[in-house]
Image (tube, rainbow, N blue to C red; front, top):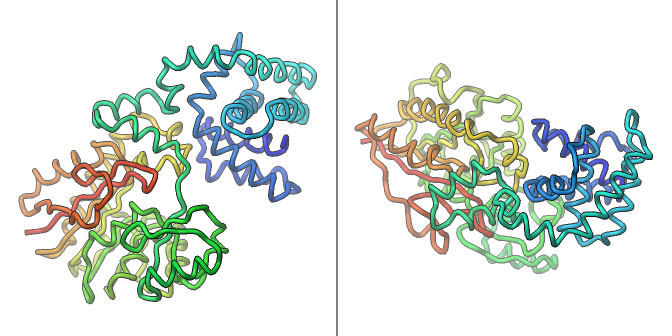
Length: 431
């Protein structure tokens, strides 16, 4: 276990220094090339778990320290161990002993004996005084919900009836949801295929099937053949709400990694242009389309510019704009601690450039679906309202109630739940 603790502490340390976990974890793992698959998997779990509950674990550690720790490696190792003691099923004394051993493996300049004694004393003190600290921290929202205070405050104002459930949902483990390509197989046939593979699952709506227990992607029946894809249920609403029909000219802007791109093509035979500003990310889109045996024109371009545009208007545009990703934090636990309150305004300014630019490319009578994976109003309906005031040729259409059956949503904002992430949708039509 100590190797997994070391890897996780390294990854968490990088994130708290400002690095994305998607980059930090592979680098931390690379330092232990001989780690077993079990150790690597445990390290990933510890990294995600520690960051998921960082507000809580950091609050406990602050209570335990008489003075600030100057060694970040020891600090993050203690965070990982406290997370285990609070949320893991591992034996408490085993966790402590392994953490003591882990710190002894740190390279200089850490004095090993001093560090071992410190880690041992702090963690054993935690075990003795956990209930005392828990009572104290119950009055602290950052410790209770494990979000930055500014984030909590914003949701309180914007969602007075839902803020707590949004925070709780964001700390849950996301389900593994599949999107069935009904061009190749029916929902019923695919569920039967899963039964034959002893995989429990249920149909939750549309083309979405949720697995009772996650399985490795390569073990999902039909995945490599393009029969199914992995995609959140909330994200699957995009292609359906876009309402594209055969023969239409469609633009999928900001398309990477291509989940919605593939879904649009699975639902209708359209002429699809998939655009993203990052040419490297477009390679991921192409890989997804190749697996699905689908084709689209891929364009590396800025959605806020039109220098790539050939002058032919689009019948449908999916504007899946860059955002804070505040609605998908259960999948990207580092976002809570990497984002700053000023980032909300920064993303909103970027969106305010993209939306009017894409609007110019839409045919008269055409529809544009504005999408974010955010729960902050500034990026969502407030953004749309400002756009409508400046564009009299635009009107916001009601969203089909059928697609939102059994889902909690407020004017196009999906409230994050155990079944789906927190996406926002606004369907606009050009007069």
